[in-house]
Picture 1 (cartoon, helix red, strand yellow):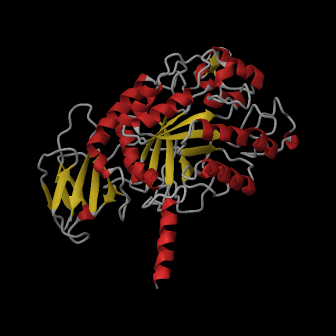
Picture 2 (tube, rainbow, N blue to C red):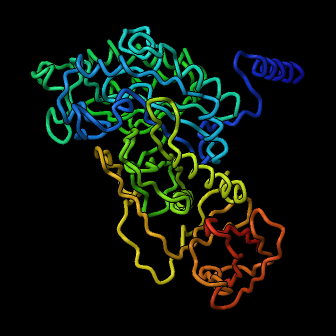
Picture 3 (cartoon, rainbow, N blue to C red):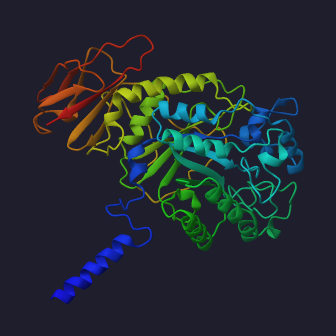
Length: 468
């Protein structure tokens, strides 16, 4: 018996002291991501420099104008001669994201134009070698993320690369998103050559130069095979086993689903994310001046998290490296609201129902409970609702229910889902971010709550903690 105990003790000690062993470590690498709820997305590249123009006129295709205007890549590359973001300040960007209540940050390292916005030793088609700026913004952003406690993510265009001769596409038809003006023979293109020659070496650069990388956000998987998707996933995880990989690695091998410019119509138990633009476009377009209001942004955040998802909100910085004034103003307002209501946002899960919409007919929306479909569209593809109407969203955490009353008319809100005959008796209702006493009553009709008075320009959405 003593010999058996000794063996067990030795095995225990070996287990504790083996390389990489961490007692009580959370084995779910998605845990922080599920709790985070809110992230910042940034599309920044050579397309930002032209600001929506080409050849003295408004370009067709916005940030995808190289494709729509059929510009030879060597001519497009000349844009880099003028790209000099001397006002770029990584500290300001990440602090703005943190103050907006965002917990992670994702930025384009290589978009469809094939240009690397980081120091890519693989080739000279990058920001270091081709621009007068000649610095690596990703290095500074990684440093700032660590400073402010923001998780770091990098976007990489996987299935589209208009600079490479071996990047075939099949959407919406064969060659539909390929560079067929420089490389007209679509049948001669072999994806695996591009995969081995460019994709894998650049992923290695990204994963090693800015480690630790928390998220690899792939886009447009295109014609990648299941074998290649698995190989790419394994390759990423060989550098960081805890790196989270989105569904656009292809072939159902991602850690979470992506819904682009749309919001699920139902609660989904699996991890998912809506990536949505603040304005109309992903990259900076000078004449794209209509932005979602802070109220709409908060409504979208609540709509998404009440259904179990995360909100990745995009804005396109200007070519000089600054954010637009409207983006900064709206993010500040959202951040102030989130700070007051954070208890009902971070670390929450969905309730038995996502929302309650009194007297409003719901419009059609995507159902993610069905097998994943291709939700990638292209430019000008914002399908999210901008409507403002009375609505209640729910989240849950540690036995408490969080009720968010949005854009409600009148002094009181009646929440029918919380009537006496539908839930347990309510013992307490508190206004989040406030010590003010809340007047409430639970009846057979529902929970009646007196709403606070909103100041001018205040986001008219109130969060309440309901205890039973």
